[in-house]
Length: 270
Image 1 (cartoon, rainbow, N blue to C red):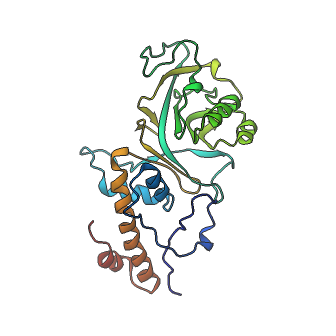
Image 2 (image 1 turned 45 degrees about the vertical axis):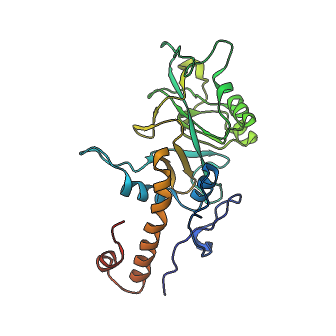
Image 3 (image 1 turned 135 degrees about the horizontal axis):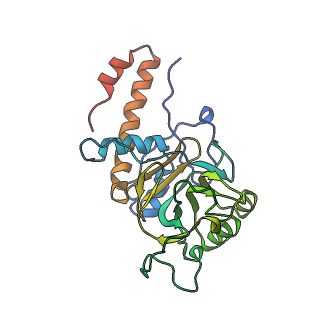
């Protein structure tokens, strides 16, 4: 049987379909798509694996550095569906960040990155972003719960990516805020943690630094990646080229060619 090239549908508002029923369409970005909203729209045609493949090609790293290719490890979707699935829409938006600290430490006093007197940290959440939250390692409390999720949803936050624990899953699901996290808890934040700074670089996903404005890409089937904001255009340019090559490879392998020969013939330098 001939291999049918893997191409995802360009569907923005509907959930992902099972790969078995994916129609064949072209996954390319229009040259007119220049605004950030249009670029994020274009990303929805791809998977997290496609993003990592592109970053692996274009990122320049110091010698001896292990490439992470944007992968943020060990995050699981908890709302609206718990666990990996093919029905939840992808969550793609620029990052805003919150860095939590142990409750005994002092929070930032910088007016740009701190929390003014008379405010709660969540009231400073930014609409149109994914709130990326760093929690100190080894803590067992939650840093996001039902009330915080309701406030984020009301403010227009697209979702939350929590490098730590969350709680009140039924309340979070009820308010409709997409949340990815590394664990859960029954204990409130005040037991161990407090907000330390906002819109600063945070360390998440196994030691990866994410900065405000980087693009967060939560793929409910494949996992989470981020795209450094200055590489977004290059990623969008490279992904369709890599996919076209791999589609030719898979077609050839499906017709009996060896993987070695298919790679040699169709995988060219970009």
